[in-house]
Length: 531
Image 1: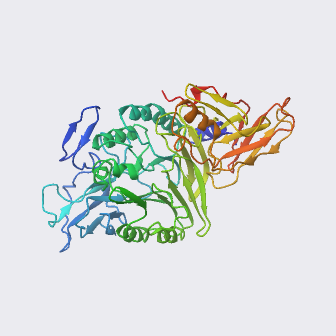
Image 2 (image 1 turned 90 degrees about the vertical axis):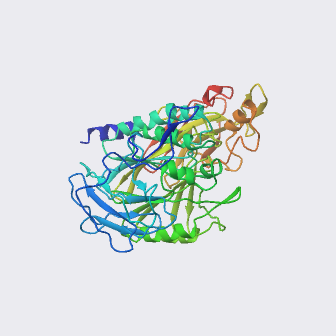
């Protein structure tokens, strides 16, 4: 179905920082957080309800709704213990000595709390103990939730890979390229929305950089959650503590409708080197968190480094075993800066590896696989994904395919680069083909759409020749980093190269049909020029 028709169908359906120090750092206007804020102005202490915690309890509180009613069975955690509120809306935890936050796994049917002063950035957490008080004295932290006015069983999910800014100029590009697109798409849907940024929230920087990105994500009008990436540790402190101070817990959960979302930190550093994996303490927390989630629900697990078939990945098998028990599941990650659909057939799990919102590190407007900077949108109803598509930043919605000829020459100021596939070959980069979990139907017509023939998939290892020509031949990037594998590229050898009237179309499992008949000129640098 044409996406514009879908939007028409949908359109017809019916800081205040408490106890927090702030300072403005040089080089930007965003405040830098030095201590943890409360979620929002309405999430302060409930002075009308007295609670006497049980003996030995060091962390407790009340979860209530906006009418003052207690919310029973709400799940609350300090990142180590996981408990549910009783009939009076009270939770009690023996706080772990390492716990920095207490957070609520927002139940279905309630709005996601937001942090005042940061737009739509999520505020499901707060400090787990007094900044100045004793960690052994019982500490009270209340949560107030607002009931939704519409069902959240049907909602839109935004998936953003690697924003990864190195400086203020990159942050500004994120604000002017990605943020407006998220806002525009969100405005088309009369249903709830939520977003996840899949790690490497910064490339280089510090607490101020995190704060600027927190503000930028809050400008989207979508409640945004983040997960931590390797740069979020190595560029700052290797531990993730600065990330936690500004952006919140490194592992947590929340709910939308029949879907349970779980964020995990899978970056394990040893000195300056890192590996992918989940610590034992995270695994213990995950098992407790999922114990509150019925098996008929859908679970969305999101993290930074792909799981794929990596046998050296700590606790990989245990995580997959846990997630595979659920009726439906989504695995979302990023890190690679290219889009890759990956089936883990041993567990019947499908991993969606997202390319970078920053593309090739903000050095152009395309990633190393030739995909334009952009992000994924998923529409979920109940426990089913009912739509899935890609949005290229600052480009038309239907811009989903780039065409080039197999013998084109890319001639730039630094070098000349010639494609090696022959004059009779047409290549189509179908930007995120397969990210829906199926094989797309990609076809070419030599007679302007009268008859169609299937295109064959190219070897992903060589990558996209067009972006190689731009990044190496024009922008003078090193060969080793100017390109990456491309898992969504197709070729066709023309029967009549001299007279062919070429049209390429690609059809996904949701009925979207994208067409392209215009070839991107090899010397048209505007397509990838970032500035």
